[in-house]
Image 1 (cartoon, rainbow, N blue to C red):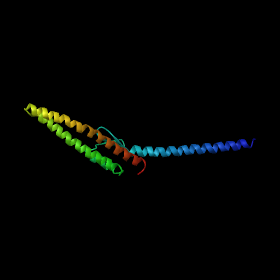
Image 2: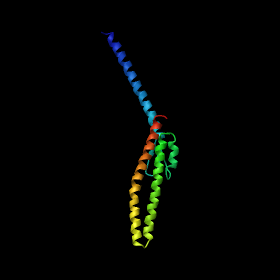
Image 3: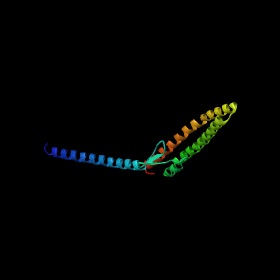
Image 4: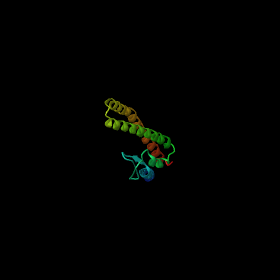
Length: 152
């Protein structure tokens, strides 16, 4: 029985050393992945995006952000859909603004009423298009960040 106690003690030491070593290796891999993700991932903000704790402007329809998304070819079609939708949103917003300004300066009441109704109706197109474009932007960045984390 006395001989089995040292053997049991040695077995416990070997197993615990292996477990600590495996846990340390896992933590090192997670730390490296976390560090890479922190440095390379993009986070969208209301006014642009953040990468490596530095804020950048997206551009009018995302031209500046597209350079970052090239890392992931899978993100490009979704991003291009965002760009198309954003361009249409800007076009309809410009039409809406022009109609509202024209309504303000015109003296004809029936024309003013028609312009204001038309400008209001344009919102029915603008709002869903704007929300869809933002969804596609977020999805493109999400795809790109996944590619960065997976090392592609």
